[in-house]
Length: 324
Image 1 (cartoon, one colour):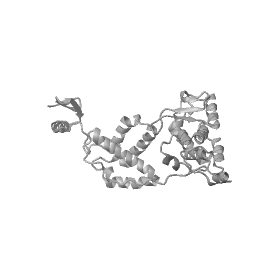
Image 2: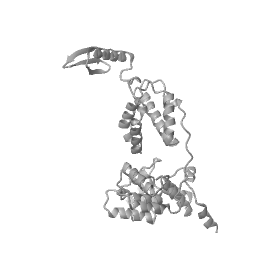
Image 3: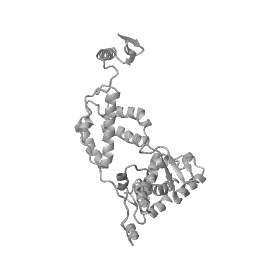
Image 4: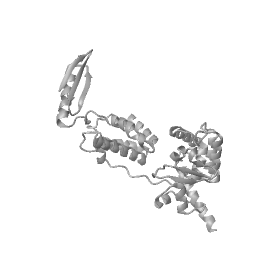
């Protein structure tokens, strides 16, 4: 049963029903209030009340809700938050969901491919999951997911980038000109431990045993915990950080780290070097030291030997030294 009443300069529509209770909304005209009331009553009778109409919801609004309700509970929330905020600023967010066709998404894919196939893949997978969640759990009345009709780009060839001769020294020299005092300790620690960026940034002092030279990681990317043994250089990094009375070993936000790393590699003239390449460097060095695959896996946290082998890029000159 709908009631329309005047409240100041607005018209308020009130709909009451035993199945949904009371819902109300204000409008500038009486006719708009009547139309809304009729639409609500129709939705109640058809069993679609509370559902999202594709013609009234944009992709950007789905992103906003996903960012608010889903992202905070995820591991790697900071990375997804940045991706969603960038998608929200993109033109694709302005499309109403009933007009978001596979052709529009294909054009978006082709445009995003300029930033690399992996980046484009992540974007489309995230969009697909947002829409799927909205259909399954948020009442979005969409018969199919348009992303399912779009061909995702194939994965790029795995990187095998390692530090070349003199590049470590270039980074060290550039670090002296970088304002962030933690970026160089992070670089050294990454090379010595093979830890991921997120793992290092989340270390707390309570998980560090300096005397035993062990760092406990309670939650990692693969969902399990691990204890990482520290080399003498890695231990020295933590000892020096501890002496500074820092709240945690590397008190840097993800965004501040990215900015500092970008400045560091720019000053070192190493624009093609990614921070994750240091993990490749570390794992490869472990094998060059003569560590077995199980021993390296304990440090790196790899569960799949094939994945570990992919990260391993041993330099021929080091093999030659052993053969000699």
